[in-house]
Image 1 (cartoon, rainbow, N blue to C red):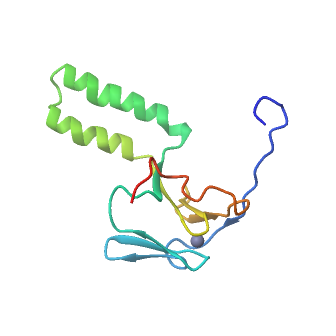
Image 2: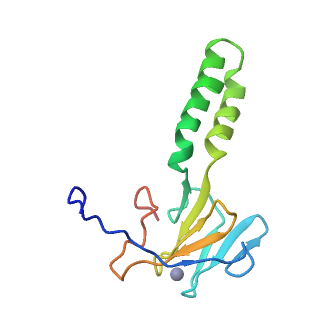
Image 3: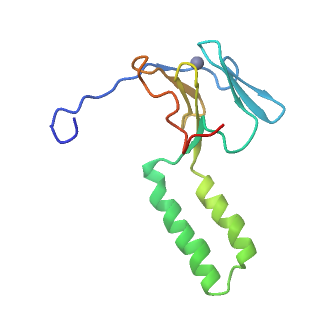
Length: 139
Ligand SMILES: [Zn+2]
């Protein structure tokens, strides 16, 4: 409905819960979320198709400015080594990000909120994409 002036606001049900005490738990360093549908969302490796890193629009311009000023300009002036630039740029890019996961079984989205709580968003219906966070098809 973009451009129609009648864009509907999609209201998703949000569940608030104390972080990682009811649905989510840590297993060693790995996060597992016990989805409300009964499935388990595991976060035990890298390159996960059901996980994404969210950077708020309110922060992305600061990230780009930070990479420009704290990394590129400083490397160009010789103030920062290329080796140090790798870590500084990763720190800048990851600092405002929060994590989100999707249950492949039911499509619920779990997003770490700015309040430190894990929020669950329920798909509108059974046709809702259950693999929306993937970059590409994977195993
Ligand atoms: Zn689920």
